[in-house]
Image 1 (spheres, rainbow, N blue to C red):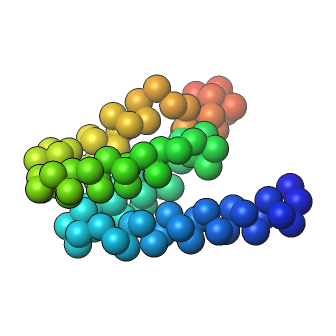
Image 2 (cartoon, rainbow, N blue to C red):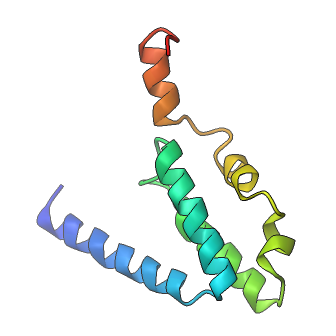
Length: 103
């Protein structure tokens, strides 16, 4: 990874954070909880995917149409987040399989 890639990555992340801050407060809170959850669960391809940006797009459209965040995703934030990554391998799964399924 070159210095240019690092700088570009930081620029993109700052732009993403600015978009999150522009969301209405209830959407922003839910987004932050989803982000925290995804960082904890650790989908392997989270950094390379556009998942977080897609969530912001989805939320911005919902807010623009006048829907509440719960109308958009339901009342179970974790279930919504799980649905987003249901077919993605996670670091926890990768670790567990490397140990032969042992806890």
